[in-house]
Length: 621
Image 1 (cartoon, helix red, strand yellow):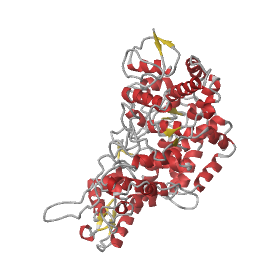
Image 2 (cartoon, rainbow, N blue to C red):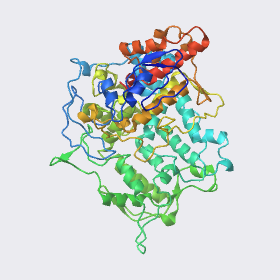
Image 3 (cartoon, helix red, strand yellow):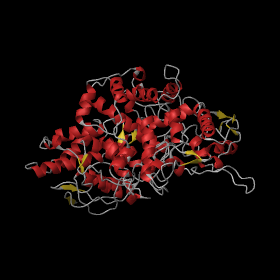
């Protein structure tokens, strides 16, 4: 048996003695495995390398991708493919505790603070208790309307310029990008817009790592501003603007792309042509409007061929940074790319059954060709289910029913006024749909998603209104699994994001029923222990010393451990922690004296870390 003492040593993903999160002692049995070590420290279950422990603890609640939804729709017979980005439908799962008629009930307003917190967990990067209370007093639709009406906060480009990152000192450096990204995600008042930007960065993936530009932070900052300006706009315009950002042109290697040379045999770079189809618009296989695959002779049907890629690649020739204000200046990276006519392929371009006629080697001719190409993709029948299913995964649940996907796809097709691609209509349908709001559905084993590490960090920072003492938001790149989150915005290891929408965790309950769990792809013993270590230190202010959360409301009730845990449970987990889990955590927190301010703070640190490590929080229901 061991005695664990607090805030003196980190968690370790290995057997052996370790120290816990608070002063005072808790007697625990020796750990039998690395996961048992984390169980001991957090006083709860945690995930294993294959995610089985977390799945067991959560009743199979987490996941992401495409399984059927028991009780709501018949299972699909679609064959599972190996494609990383293509959503697929799974097999039937066991009976779910859905009451008769529950799936058709309409929920328009939160019945209690738990409903309000649950809604905000889907619609925001995190919310304070005051914001949850305010949400209770309005309808879900009214809250969305209010968010749509909020103005954008200071742009990334303006902030970078104001902080001096445009000076020659930062030429060729990435300094400033992490700062402005965290600034927006943690402090910008437009909660829904920031949540959508997060979702879009995991579809339109650009990474600063290895980025080759004179001012990479401005290039990627401008790209984020484009996502933000179009988050409530139209997906067609989003595609057009993203396709002319220097960030996307650099990351997917079509900036400076040249027309074919018959003499040398060189061909245009096809990278962006392939990825805009595979990842941003139509996917690899033809889909029904409900997201299930179209099958011919029991086999999926490809959406495009190599010839289509080659034909589309001709559109993305001749585009280059706008250096009219100078090449080694931030302005070259904060404007849409322009044409170098000598590099542009003016001939006809054929792909997906469409031929864009030959046009002049001019800026206008290239823009016309680009617009026609985007319109072809935008009007493809795969676009609505392919995009909408991923947005549902990012916000609400990893395994939406075919009916849910169909309803959201229909909102994409027609916003009610004949407009296709209206993001406001799509967002409304995702968040207001009965499958998202119905509390009975949320208890089914197929519903929910694993909160990715960045979201957990933002839930904490937003939940207690963290500010930057210096105004510089010195948080940095948190990609390290050893001493960070194992994930950091704009640091994806590849264009396929940190995880893939069709990922199925092997040796798990999700895998058993062919349910996808995207976020489990970055979940293993190293990332679990690293996350708990990091959050323990961040919560207690041992690291990230520039970040200042406001724990005033928590220290005021810290003497009452039950009230303390209840408030944290509401703000972080939407009240999802069970009575049994809360009792276990209360027993641990009660070992810490609350006789003075230091003891009260230690109680707050311990309670926050314990909840942040709980599977009932980590799985968003």
